[in-house]
Length: 163
Image 1 (cartoon, rainbow, N blue to C red):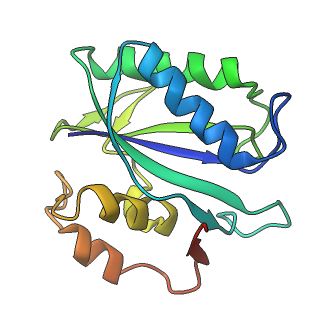
Image 2 (image 1 turned 90 degrees about the vertical axis):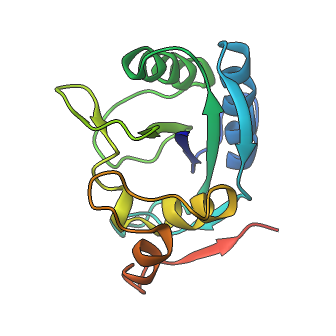
């Protein structure tokens, strides 16, 4: 299972709603030759690390492709740019953020890509949406179940299902 994290907390030139930016990114993923097989519900989440930024809209998608992980990452970066993301500083507010979270059970530790995503286990905005589409997912390195990862989350992370 290939998993992509999706997030937005800024308006774009096309929409004032971060949720629309996430939907546009999903549409472009499909047009990039990567099949979107499933998408979680959308969640409203506080910024991590905590800041005075606007809250995010987050989701997780399962996708299917024959592209290797590095090529998927490149496509995701191209889609971010197409939606209007400009990379300035780490943890800055953004129009859209696409993260390759996991690629089947592959484990990579490269300069540009680490799989599974190194901060995946500590982020409610990834784990709770992931639970919607892959409740039986197991972390390929730690062998922890998704339920165990969710139970270990810092309860201070604020997240709610977007209506």
